[in-house]
Each structure stands twice: as C-alpha cells, then as structure tokens.
Amino acid sequence: MSIFESFSVISFILVHILALFFGCLVLLRIAWTIIRNPSALKAVKITAPTSLTNPEFGEHCYMRTPSGLNFHYVAKGDLNKPLMLCLHGFPEFWYSWRYQLQWLSENYRVVAMDMRGYGESDHPKGRGEYVMTKLTQDVREVMSGLGFSSCILACHDWGGFIGWTFAHQFPDMVERLIIVNCPHPMAAEKYVFTHPSQLLRSWYVYFFQLPYLPEFWIALNNYEVFEDMFRGEQMGVRKPGSLTDEDLAAYRYMFSREGALTPPLNYYRNVLVRTKSDRDLFKARFRKPVLVIWGTGDRALESGMLEGTADFAPNLTIRYVDGASHWVQQEEPEVVNECIHDFLTAQSYEMINRPN
Picture 1: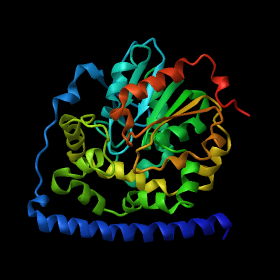
Picture 2: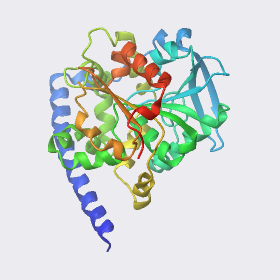
Picture 3: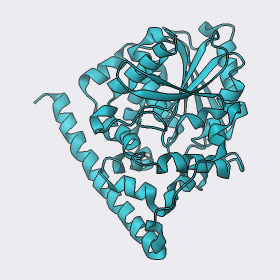
Picture 4: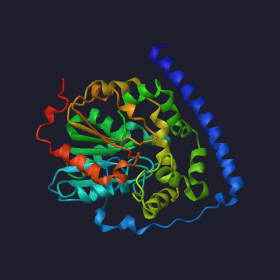
C-alpha cells in the first residue's frame, strides 16, 4: 500500500468517527426538540414568497445541457456585455445573488444559476451525480449554452470550491475569479487538520456524511434550522434587517420541496473523497486575477483559512468586510458590489501581487 493509499484509509476512518460523534450530538438535540415541542414532527406546507418572482432581479430562464440536465437561471443585463456567472453556496440557490443581479447588470450580463440538485434545476438521484468533475462540467456547459467561451466567475461558499476547481481545470474559460467566503480547497485542507478550532467549526461537514439523519434534522420543526443558519447568533447575519422574513421564507420554501434536501447534502458526501489526480489538478497555478471577499464575522470559516492562497493564485487581492457574516454578499451588498466593481475596473492587475 502506497503512502497516499495509507493516508486515504486513515482519513476515511477519521471522517467516519467524527461523523458518528457529531451525529450522536445532533440526535440528542433532536430528542430535546421533540420533547419540548412534539409538533416539531408535523410537516407544514410552505408557500413561495413573491420575492422569488420579483422582475427587478432578472428574467427566469431554462436550458438543457449536453449532459442531459435542465438548468434554471436568472439573468439580467445586456446580452452583448461580458458574462458574470454566479455560483451559489449551501443552503442557497440563485436568490443569494439577487443584489448583484440588480446592481452589476449595468455593465455585465449577470447570470445566477441554480446548480444541479438545487432550486428549479434538475435533481439527479445518487451520490455519484454530485462529484466535482460533473459539477465543473455543468459550469462549462452552461457557459457555452449562454453563448460565451469565457466569463467572470463569481462564487460563494460551496460555489467557491467549484469555482476554484473550475479555474484550475479550465483556466482559459475564466477571465477573472471572484470568491466570496470560501478558501482554496488545498489551503482549506491543510488548515483544518492543523487548527482544531476550525475542525470543530466544520462539524457539519462530517455530520452530513451520515445518511438520512441530516435530512431529518434540517426538516425538523418546519425547517427551523434556516432561522439559525441565516439569522441565529452563531451563523446568522450581523446587520439587523439585512435578511428579511421574506428572504428567509424563500430559502425555507425552496428546500422544503419534495426531494430538495438530499442532492445538496450529496455535495458534502463527496467533498472529503479526494484522489491523487484531484490534488494534481491544483499543482498548476491559476495566474489570472483573483479577488477574495471575506466577511470577518464568519463563524463557520476562520479567516486563517486564506493562508497559502497566493501559492495557488499569485495574482491575488483580498478584501475583508469587517464584522460581516458568512452571508456577506446578502448582508453587505453595497460593500461587496463596490469591491467587485473596483476589482474589475482596476487599471493594472499586474500591480496586485504580481505573478512569479
């Protein structure tokens, strides 16, 4: 057995030990919730808020890709302007880019897609449908279907992992890369296993490796977990009023639909499975301009996870948004949009961390 294979076996065992440990903790929390409120088990139909069809956010469109999947996206801006393709995170969908669709579409053709398994895009069944090679292929096919050979790629959270990978895999298709609160995959891996505090913050990644229980936990008490994620003291936005009741209803509605939970969780169930070829992909640096926007109040990801990012993307700019949460592009949209505008209109990218 090679060193890499031995490391993979050890990692597999460690991941499942952590999954069971955090699963037991969540089971205790579930039991306590049901004891206090037996009606938490009752399913309540959630209706779609009017914000999902607000024409100010853009036009709702669909396309079928060569892979045979139907993708939903919202687009705004002149078709002849440069494409800005936006990839959302978890638990989100196109809606998390609503402010960028409104304000950046003056100079760009802004498209926010529902990634596979999310929102109104197709939800193929099976964990194997959510491996990274298929996720990056989706981005490539959607971009081509929109009539572009390259784009400005804007990504948040899970979309950031896809964006980083896509940029290394297809560098000619990315003119500029914008990452919002997501570390580089290789930098993140190293940081997590050298910083126990981040390992604890990443508890949900290991918990999501379990079957069925994560879906049950999320749906419990009428999807109350979304209140905790987006507006709770730990993970929620810090700026009062930045995420409204209607915004929260949009997320709860979209993930309460039949079959809407397992596909997004399957992203996590594949993320810890990384082959040698996956790692080799990141050996070649992505040398085009990269902007990382980071809300320093993120309780899920420590700012230290950005350590070593320049080793993979030497033409790097980092803009910190003081105190903002993980949901920074929704909490501080004016600041984020200004950061993006400044980055895209800079006179000379060579002046920013010049590539070696």
